[in-house]
Length: 257
Length: 52
Image 1 (cartoon, helix red, strand yellow):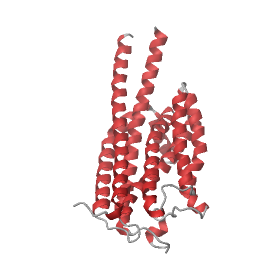
Image 2 (image 1 turned 30 degrees about the vertical axis):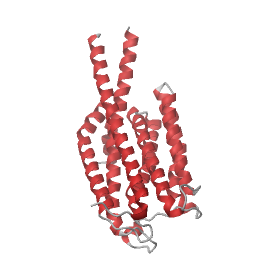
Image 3 (image 1 turned 90 degrees about the vertical axis):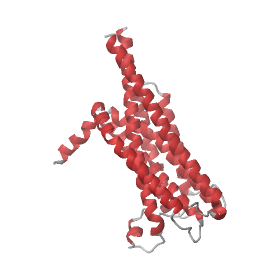
Image 4 (image 1 turned 180 degrees about the horizontal axis):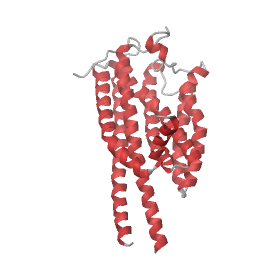
């Protein structure tokens, strides 16, 4: 299939009816596989992995902290892509997908911040530090709240989609910063990447990495969070499409009255 | 069956409780709003088509 043909295949989902029909068909798969991965991953991690020799049982927090932090950043990046699609091609479904994803991002960021604070207290001796990664994550959380507030504050949906898309572009700096902050600045309490580093997984770099005994259930939890995110985005985008249809019907009804 | 979490039991258990609670609330609220909006749309569509 040529690139142009592939692109046409993607753009057909800009049609709300096509999007709804396809998402309803694939949603049972995503809900079920997310539930299986999360239950197996969390039970494996919580009950069947040993304590870490330095961190003790707090290492079990990794199965929630790392996947939620990953999703907090990647959710914003997904919103960035769909916002760009809206700005360039004016497809309503993409703007609504970004709107639908924002509350998921808020919850993921909040889970990462809370579990990080609870984990940090016994390990660092403090709930919070103005460390580059922690601070950029807090700013990302505030951007999520601002993004949702902006959608709610503007009555005209197209204007709201325009302005929130611009806000999303600006906030992307902090989404990327929260991922790479520890690489830019050496000060701070938060450790560098020790899980999602190609060299660490394949063993080609010798820097300290997460042991495989923790990595396998963690990987399953990450897959579970990704699948749950996809299921939620598809479902919530469907809800936003229907809410938009109600507004259109009511407007038509008022115009006809 | 419950693993011995030692002196960090509070930290680990509260992390799991809060995270799972937030995830369950997110899914439940999404499903609740989804069903409500779907029912409202069907009702509005029926009314609009009835009134022409």
